Image (cartoon, rainbow, N blue to C red):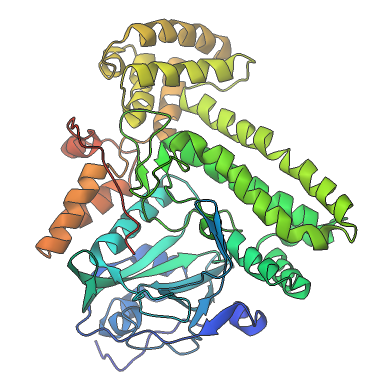
Length: 494
């Protein structure tokens, strides 16, 4: 291919055009010897881009930061945030550059961002770079979440830079090209609010409404309606996390998008055996972001967003607080509704009964007491509907509690009046057999980093993008890790 032909993006950079004060113009640092790790042809087509033109030396130059595509206005976005409860008035993109925005084939606006491309004005002493391991980890988990039907940022490309990254040891550097509905965060609003700039808060809110929730613009109180829309999107998102055993690991307000997409896959992981208190992050010593705490942190984070909107919701502060508090008080029942709807479907129920919440919670109690695998319990319940309970019973160290629960479940299932096979098929379409098992992710990353062997990564990626399709040759990807006394820990990757 003639590498002098530059791929076309047709950028339309509304954030850079209209949100002065929320970013700093910046350039990527050069990559010494870039090479491809992975390119997402399917996503490129969704974005209206030419995958053949991008999967080339010319594309490699762009995704390594060595070439700026036509129409790009590279910027590092500014935001603040509560990190583990402590407020930082200025954080920002310390290792990321927004190349620009494109309009995809569904006429949706999408950000294209380089992550790990070097220092920016917001780096706070960091090198702004990323290593191959964390880049491929975010690629794997983000694409797995997409295939699981969870709103998420996406991975368009991963490239090795040929540069060295210094952490506890020297590591090979890499850049992830991330795609998002936008990178506007709760922390972006906090950035303006920390500067007591009401005009900037309003400007950001108006932009966010136009970009993400245009239906709220005509509401009686647009800013209150906007807050309610963000709360709805986030409540739905966290309910989806809980339904697949996903622990984000770092639910800081700067990692919570206005769009309702999952973002920043640092110390995230999926649990194996069920435990409500599961924590993977090596820095979450108090369990602030444990699995069972995620719904409460959802409300805490949204309350911080509400604080920034007080001057917009009503000129009288007391009235504004009253209106926002009323909306905040609706978040818990809203989340519970999303969660209960999802969990009913996961156990094969299509109707509602007041006892369903207790039934589901009692299953979790049995799973925790029986040290049962989260993903496999839900997947193997469909086998019980088909007449074979042994596959799911065998997941419990002592199935006595599960046996008692199963009898109640069958009585509840019989109320639905739907055939067992119909429900089993529905369950198999909702309950994955394959998730990013922590040990399989680590195996793939170790091969890529230590031996430059991408075969395990590519195989795992292929399995994870078909999470509901059970195949005999993929049995190893469905099994939890062998028992160990050493708890699995994840790290930010920065």
